[in-house]
Length: 450
Ligand code: MV4
Image 1 (cartoon, rainbow, N blue to C red):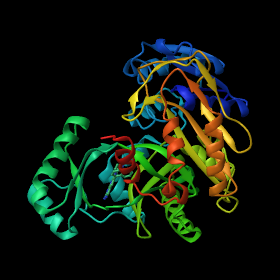
Image 2: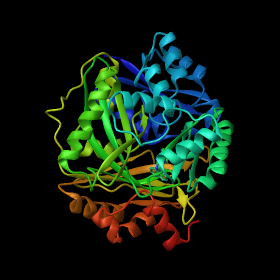
Image 3: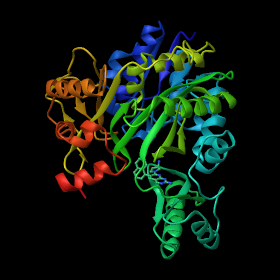
């Protein structure tokens, strides 16, 4: 096992990793920008290294600075958290070239899943059900129109290098194809330097269901059920839960096994998430994320596992501490993302926290790097906390969420807390009857959010 690891991240996820390391008897090294000298992850780690000025580009994304911080402190492995360098295959290669260990998948797996066409080809080959559409890339408008007719409109054109909804255009009819195809290509080119696109049948009212997988890199892999992350605004998730309210035990077992077998087959190592659209009882693969995700705590809640501890174990060559047979779901968990944002438009709202009080009690977990007097810098993501609740069933988790939100105090900046108070009054949220468009419709109707 490692004696010391470096966390190439900030905020709540840096604390999350430091905590797991400490419980394992591993020393932690924080890195930080000059804007984060007073940040909680710097205080909580055993050691810290300043790696650059405020801009992410010159600090949390600066590979030479992070490698140098490892060499200075003697850290043997790097945990990337999520975002920043977590899905950067070049970073993984450089880490390995320096004789260090990346706590995450191989550069090859990151590369495969980072290119959406290659990811889909690979998953299809492994027996994972995919959205019907083009086999691979579509180079010309003629081909695009032919595939549109074959698949049937509406279709969606997606940039192979895309993500976060960029480079994605719906064509409602054949007449719409030229505009959609050209725009998707142009967005792929300008955002990612890659104009290759592919085409899928457009599913109109799906849920976003993602399967948590975990591999040991030696041919063993398990699944830890699904999360329903359908409540999103502009591709930013705001409310996530596990298990999915619409997923039956037999569906979970079936799609879970397909995913676990696929990961075993490719010797996947560490945590991963296989994203599906779910409509009319069918799962359709869209993408795979080769990292620990923001919403991983809901899965930890219902399976009573520490996913970060498992990531560190397998990265050091140990086995996972669970098997598929001893992974059993207990109850229901919900996470809400507390962002420093002003409603109704969710505009970022950095500033000084004049008072912070975290909720507590049975079944409540607050993952946050906030403290009284902390100043949220304007340079990074607006996520300032995650409130995760667990109950014996969904109604109990919802009641606990409402109770815990009532205890939570974040003064000094605007936050998304009022949104959750309002959502917990909605029948569709209480019954779990929502899809990927529900929240944007609700925001338009109730807050006038464009
Ligand atoms: C789709 C889709 C409908 N049909 N693909 C959005 C981000 C990217 N990860 C995939 N996305 C979608 N792909 C087909 N074939 C609808 C979306 C989509 C979406 C997916 C998940 C959660 C929220 C969403 C919001 C809008 C569109």
